[in-house]
Image (cartoon, rainbow, N blue to C red; front, top):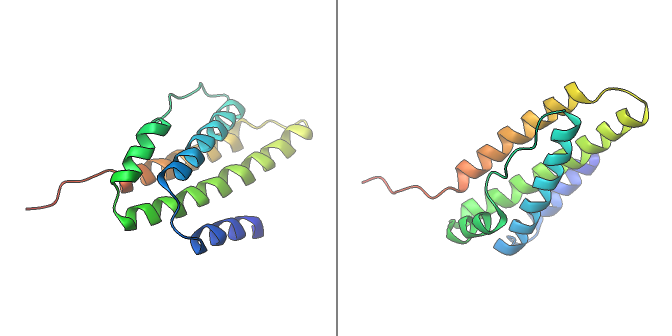
Length: 126
């Protein structure tokens, strides 16, 4: 838990990340999510949006959306890294990973969808 707190706090104390940096981190999260999906024994999912699309969304986002995306990506990185480490321990012990990996996948999926919804451009109300 301490590692997750450190990761999130270090990301929020630094200046807002560039769109390119966030897009690179987004792509790395997709790779980790595919590892989680494999451990959950579910088929690979097509990438929600590709790196270039994500970078374009960040370029068009407002400052609060970029800050939110920066924090959300740090949270997702902590979730996936710690989750994969825990799942790796199960593999080493010869235990099944399907149920815990599926739970982790669902958490990741919902957080990812919330992040995408938050940074999607919306029309101003009249």
